[in-house]
Length: 151
Image: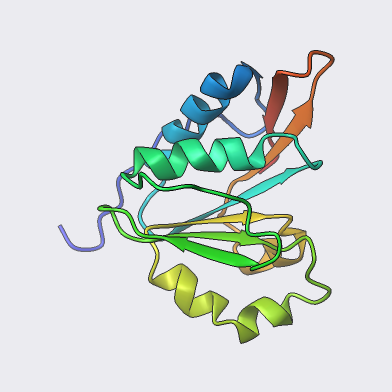
């Protein structure tokens, strides 16, 4: 049925928190976000080393990519080909003005991707008002993270 949207249940409700113990749980939690609709944007926030890349590794692997998934800190954008479609991974940490990302064809990249993960993307929240925002935080145990869905 054209125009019919299926409600998708995401792994975390707005305001909900989850504790992730170790790399395996972080990656498995990332994999659970493949439930996002094709073309969706997902924002990841958190301090350096809080687990954004581990989360991304799990999600991209769950979509069928078997290569290395790394933070695009210096490249700003990585594109991972998966059988489900390309996954765009953006790191806006070093971007002074989000216009830089749009000059790199962010709109077109997002539209042609199965899923777009954007780290440190606060400056883009208004442009993608339906995109979930996850905040990852360190816990007392160096292997444990807490993830909170902000939006």
